[in-house]
Image (cartoon, rainbow, N blue to C red):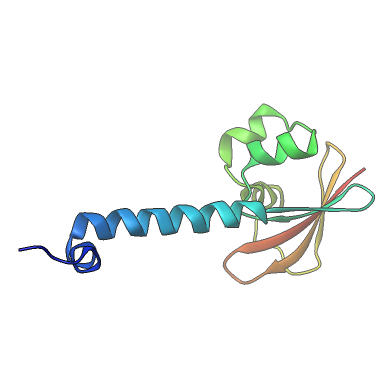
Length: 118
């Protein structure tokens, strides 16, 4: 008995998983595109979820190895510098000449950061 392709695709759990994996891969790819926005005069608006490695590659400033060992994301780096979740509008200076301004945060996490390269 021949089933229509659509019916088979809907019924097959493996095909559904593959379809969902492709969907999530597309979402993640689109999400990665907006993690870092260039602004004029060495300003960068970034997501706190941007990895430190990607951040260093894009900005061109490299952080000390000791700081990178403890954190994976830029939001984690800012949290470690301050020792708490910063409030919106708070400015954190880094010894490498970076200035982090918190654009969006709630009581549990940092969401968006403005980075000024001095």
